[in-house]
Amino acid sequence: GKKQKGGPPAAPPLPAGLGDFISQHEVPPSFGSWHEQLPARPNTGLLARWHTALPLIEAVADIEPSRAAACERVWVKRIERLVEMTPGLEVFHEELGIVSIALRRPGQRLALKDELRQVHKWMASDLSAFPCASAPSAAATPVFIGQPVVVGDFAILRLALGAELLADLHMRSLHDETDDAIVVQKLGWINANFDALYAWGGANLPFDLSELLGEGADGYCGELPERCKGIGKEVAYAQQTLRECDAICFDVDSTLITREIIVEIAEANGVGEEVQAITALTQGGGLPFHEALTRRLALMKPSTDDLQRELDAKPPHEILSPGVHECISLLRERGVRVFLVSGGFRQMIEPIADEIGVSRSDIYSNTLLHHEDGSFRCHCPDEFTSRAGGKADAIVDLKKKHGFRKVVMVGDGATDMEARDVEGGADAFIGYGGCKVRRAVMEGSDWYVHTFDELSRALRE
Image (cartoon, rainbow, N blue to C red; front, side, top):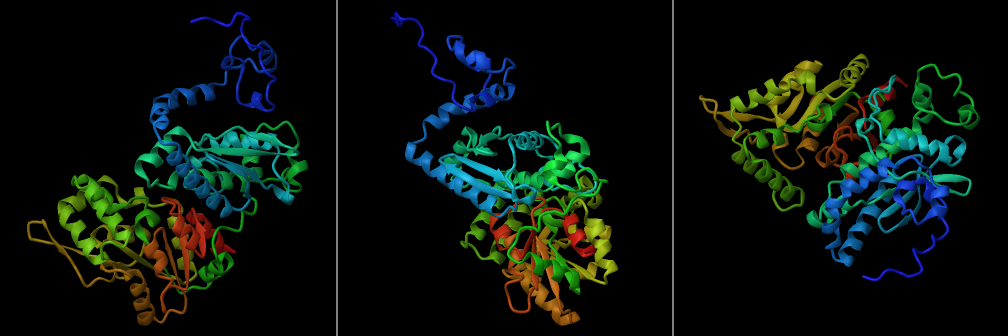
């Protein structure tokens, strides 16, 4: 076709801050004035993101605008809720598909651009090797977010709804919030431990950090600074109850251990999707709990060989959540009796109890029954955890049997939280998000933790 006779159009003025995102390699040669103001080094991160996003562009383009806008609103509100529950983080601005976040530093000042550049670097790094404390599981996950943007005397970080997540929200209607929670959790943890991470040797800031952080930065000797007070409705109460309790009850799957045993057995037996569908129906109130358990087991048919195969593949000492042994030891030193209360299978939980020194008689769980040849027969219907509200009933039972004054429940799921919400049930509920983050549990917990080290620190206070 015909070209413009006057040559290429003149470049408009370079927008403020654009140099933080692009280089000379991302603009056409005709924009000569931009080239003079942009860095020569290629923005490889931007190029890599474009390369990854290209296959999704067509799929996203086919989404109806109203549907895309609805998905964006859902995601933005979700990020806002997570940020509001994370000390030190504040929503500065939100628009469709983008949430801008400011970080509060010591003295309640807002973080500067150079600090956020370092946060940006740490977010994209595996920080699981950080010494002196067990970092949350999110610390090991590289997270790529937008570069910091200066706003007046401080700076912000921007979380954007990418094409892949938008397509996922559109196609599935129900997006797993775990990834969103990991992003915000890691950001909050880095902010709370900025000075310790810096002293660890992971920063290269063009200013004296001690001037910004105040006393303590130069004198760092390997111990973490005081962490944020925590997430939850009654954090101080839950921590005090933990220190005063006679007994504590731990969920097993995705709490004491990093696995979901029922899911893994179902997948190994080729019925993973069917079992998860029944679980979803139950959580939505469409199926009674005891009937759901019966249906799932009828599909899975877990034989003694199936159970042994799972135990052999990942023995208990390999799947314990970090910090469990130390936490259990501290509880024992205080004379606290430890119970395991789980909807899982006794045959799989007993080896875990043995590993951490919990008596098998202090397990409340489901028991599988088998024929002489090892094939699955049924489950015992008399166990507390075979029915809805079973974990709460188990705690009521152990309180009556042993006369405990205060009992704490720790777990990752809604059934764990329910154990607190009945008369005679748990006196405090501590939600655990080290394996899976569930928003309802995070919001409903008296205290929400991501590591067992957080429990251990509270016990030492």
